[in-house]
Image: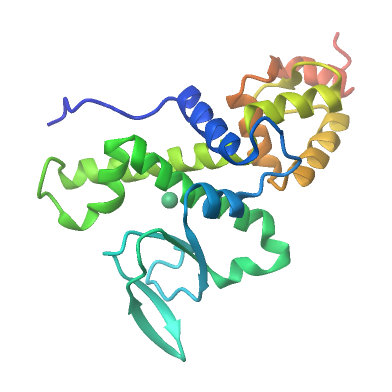
Length: 240
Ligand SMILES: [Zn+2]
C-alpha cells in the first residue's frame, strides 16, 4: 500500500488552477482585491452560512458540508448536531467581526480550495471525506492522517494563490518596486523600506503580510540574497 501513486498537485499546478478559477469570474481583468465570496457563490455554486460552532475541536472554524457529515453548532443555547446540505460552506460567526476580515477571507479561500482540490485530486478527496471509515478501503489510518495533514497544506497553498494570483502579484510588484522581482535576504527577510511597501500591498489585497510573502516566493518573484548583505545594507555591520 505504501507504493500508492502520489497524485498530489505541485505548486505550479496549484497556482495555475487558482489563476483559472479567478479568471472564471473576472475574465482578463486583474482585480484590486479578489472577491472570494463571489467566487465561492458564483463560480463554485456554494452557499455561505454563519453559525456558532460547538465542535470539541475548538480550532474548527469552517466547514465545507458534504451533506453526510454533521457539524455541532449552538442553537438557542443547546448543541445541535446539524446536517448541512452539500455545497454549503459554514463559517464560525466570530469571523464576521470587521477586524477579522483578512482572516475570514483566507478561511473562506481555504474551504473553497478543499472543494477544488477534492474535484481535481482523488487523494485529497479521500482524506477529506473518508476519515471516519478507519482502515476500510484502500487507505490505512496512518496514511489517512498523513493525507489529511498534507491536504491542509495544499488547501492553504491554493487559498493564497486564489487571493493573490500570479498575474496580480506580477502587476503589483512592477508597480510598487519598478522591477520584476523584489530582493529578499535569507528566508523572507526584506529591507525596512520594502517591508513598509509589502504591508501596504497586503492591506490593499486583503491578505496578511505572511500570505503575501509566501505567494511572492511561490510565484518566483523574489531575488534571494544573503543575510550578510542584509546586515551590511541595514548598517548593522560595516561590511569589513
Ligand atoms: Zn482545511
